[in-house]
Image 1 (cartoon, rainbow, N blue to C red):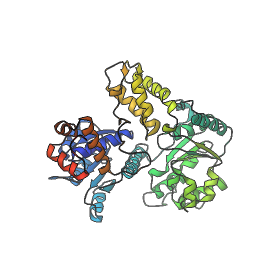
Image 2: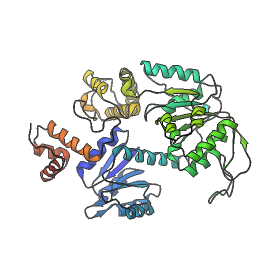
Image 3: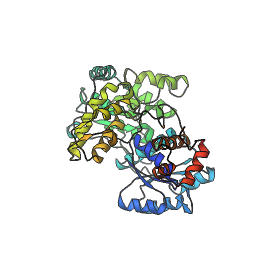
Image 4: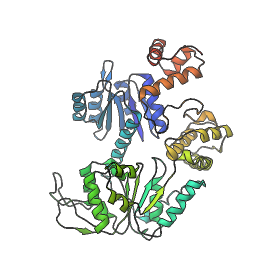
Length: 449
């Protein structure tokens, strides 16, 4: 998904661009509201991340203007002056959310992913059922021959032989929905519907209405009866992504469906029988959540009849060459480019990188490299992620701040420019005075050691 980042600090813009692109976003930059409006005139953008205070400019005014042009636009505001009043004003003016600096990058990423999911739900009219089997393209197969992924193949194959519930564990970008579709399309339910919903993308009340349906008058705005996703998936499969994000109240109602095989639409006194296979997925550790009292133990055991653990890409690096070449072929055809192979040094770099965004990030990097290259073989210079020999901006599992990422980026640029301050300033997009100020702030010596 494309995101426009607006901030008058060039280093912040560069840091956010590097971070977000490594997580699969396509990023456009603007250093002022005027420039942001120009970007919006040139290219459609549905998601905007903007600072509030930008010199004489005001991010709230930008929000109001963009909302006039595109009411469905989703905007998140950043500020170094966090307050209850500021948050209220931002939300009342139509911001999707509000985040105070300094912020945790993982928290920002979670917020942006939620905003992106919200946009997708709007585009699909608040989460509609997927097309029936006959209209679906064949699912992309999981690729690789490492021990971990082979185990996924075997467990997935066994899961197709029954209608038991399945719980899929895996980080974002590992292919959880891909596995769930493979289970459905190779099972006895393949002629029924495959219905997918991201439980973390909707509020509790909206998710309840989407899952169970509602009757006319059940709440303000319920002008007619609405069938829920359980009924739409009757005879098929319901994929509940990010099941660890559902509220305690919905956990109870979901447990009842699994126990009784029936649902009760919101506002109705009548129960409806449903025959649905549940495949759930999460990046969270549900067992720890059970111990912490955040997830019902009885629901957890109902869901985990069959468990599938998808390993992150960093734990199956031997699969990277095959994955990379599959994506290379795909995007060479799609983009009408004659790119035939990946150089040995570039492939070594792909193998060394940690891939926090997993297979999704690898695919994004290959697509970008194919789109940008003018050669027939991809080289190291065609890839824009961080050199593994330099400390990474965000290590796996760490919750680093934007400030720590900025410090590491400045240090990396200084090292690469052999501490040439003029060259480093040019690369960073700031003047030398700003470079000195930031170096002093972060305790960076502006000379080669």
